[in-house]
Image 1 (cartoon, rainbow, N blue to C red):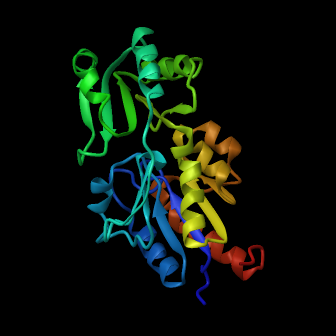
Image 2 (image 1 turned 60 degrees about the vertical axis):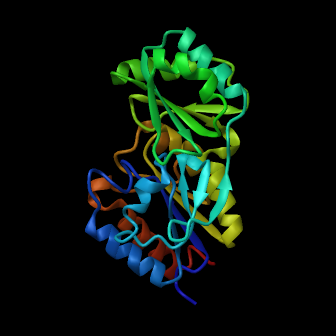
Length: 263
C-alpha cells in the first residue's frame, strides 16, 4: 500500500498550481505522490480541452473537474463522470444582471457542444438569446474591463435573487454563474465518493475556491490567496510560484509519518 493511498488532492489551476507556467518542483512531487498511491485532480473553471493539453506533463491519475465543478471527465479516455447543466433560472439571473447595468462588457457561454467557451458582447447576446437558451449550458461568465468594476458587479449580483445558483469570481474581472449543486465543493465530494477516497485535500486562491476548501477534510490557501480564502482555510502554504503543491505534498507526508493523519 502506498503512503498516500486513500488521499484525493484537488487543486485549483490558475493562481494555485499554474502561474503562466508549470513549476518543476510541483511536477516532481506529484509524480512521487501518485507513485505512492495518491489521487490527483485539478478543479478549475477551465474547459477540458485546455487542461488536456497539459496531460503529458501533469500526472493526472483520476477524473478532472472542469467548469468550476459542472463537468467531471477522465482526460485520457473521455469517460464522463458528471455533467451538471443550468436550468431556466439562469436566464432570469442574466437578465437581472444586464438590466442592472453592472459594467460587464461580454458574456461567455460554456456549453455542451463547443470545445471552447463562446463569447458575446452584451448586444450580441440579446440578439441571439433565444437560440442560446436552447443550449445545454454548464455556466456563464461575465467579464468587466477593470477589477473595480468586477468587484462592484459581484457585490451587486450577490444581492439579487440567485435561486439555487452561485455568483462567484475566479479572478478580478469575472463573474461566473452556475448551479450551487455543480460548484467545486460538491464536485470534489462527488469525485471522492466515486473513487473511494478517505481524505480530501483541496487547495485554492480565489472566491470560486471557497466552497471547495470548506468541503475538504483539509483545506489549504496558497500564500497569494485573497483574504477571504485564507480566513476559511485550515492551513496556509507558500505562494504559487514557490511550488505550493509540492509543499503541501511534503506536509501531508510529514503528517502521515508522524501519525497526525491516519488513513
